[in-house]
Length: 114
Length: 113
Image (cartoon, rainbow over all chains, first blue to last red; front, side, top):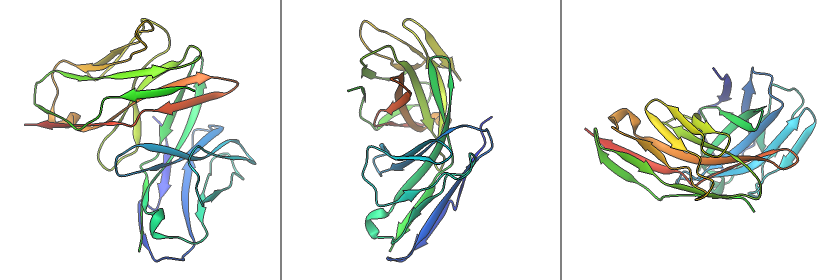
């Protein structure tokens, strides 16, 4: 059973506010990811980390930033929220088992920026 | 580069109908293939996987066979239930100096009672 948590689950916030979306996992996985999921349900990788102090930008350009100070924690921050940031954000972690990398997802944060 | 293409949705079926969701892939090497499912209000979770050609992954009545000759990994279920209504994602994972997972665009399934 995978244990990966995201808070808050839902957030409504005004334009210009700074927000941090939290993601934590208790499985000791080195790799963690942030995806943005659009209304059509397609996933877009925006950030990933292969371990402590390692962070990389993903395939989709994003104005957000991430940090990885502890293995279990991978927060995502928006310095100044805008309506274009309205979306669902999914956090995931992964483990390599032989030839396959299985990803474990949190429940997501639905963000609405007014 | 590597990619995953799956059939567009939504797919609407009556309960007990047969389900097929098509998935094809392109890859430079020998990827592992996955189906993930996302139920309403939740994140994705692994449904099944296959790591080499001709392997069949199965779980909860769903199954998919890794077909290297047709580069496909179609998802099937013989008799769907209302509780199967969800979004299904096909994905591949390949080790290219570090694993990378690529997801398809997702196919939404509605099952009517």
